[in-house]
Length: 157
Image (cartoon, rainbow, N blue to C red):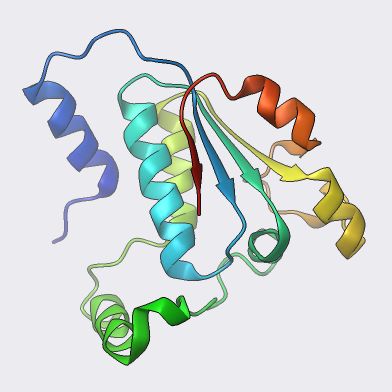
């Protein structure tokens, strides 16, 4: 059975002495493909396991993936992966070695201070309110509020 992302992160913590976190990890998530959503979730879980605050700012096509009833849908993978990447991703899922990105985000939230907020501009653009979003989403905020909380590295996915 595959080791979960959370278990892997906890093993790293046990093996290394950790210093005081260097501020929040802020993730700007604008791609809505399963591979990129998964990458963001893994980063969030790892940072949360290390005691870092995590802010995820969900924009544009990623917002669609967080709509109620859409989270568990197949969102495909990035065209950058090419045919070999698509095949490898399908094989990973078929073998049971893939943990859905939404579950990894849920585990990250259980581990630490992880907030997922939808971009106000994107919600306005798509005509979406908080009531239309999955419970993973904590709220809606503007870019200025997100940037005010970005006290550490900012990752764009």
